[in-house]
Image (cartoon, rainbow, N blue to C red):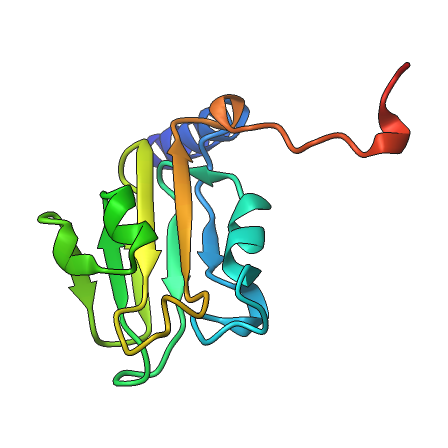
Length: 144
């Protein structure tokens, strides 16, 4: 009984402090596949609040795509994982990535011109919800 009470108490504290983790399917219903537009994944990522402890799920078929996890903006911008000595390349799908620490990560597909065609996004990972960037206010909600 005491063990159950402790687990519940920890869960409540985590929720109050905003550190409940989420599982996020990259690209939503599109998954980690060639996007309908070149900016699709950038728009999708801009709508997310990536927090430490969250898990990204990359849904793709093995041999159809890869997931390269990069720390170099240059490698990301040039769609070239070989420019990042810290690059991790995952070739088997689906793939789950836990966001273990705050910072910037970049994700690209290394197959053919997939990255150049928009199969990439950047993620800013923050410690807590309070550190996450606030969504922009809609023009109708601005006070003048």
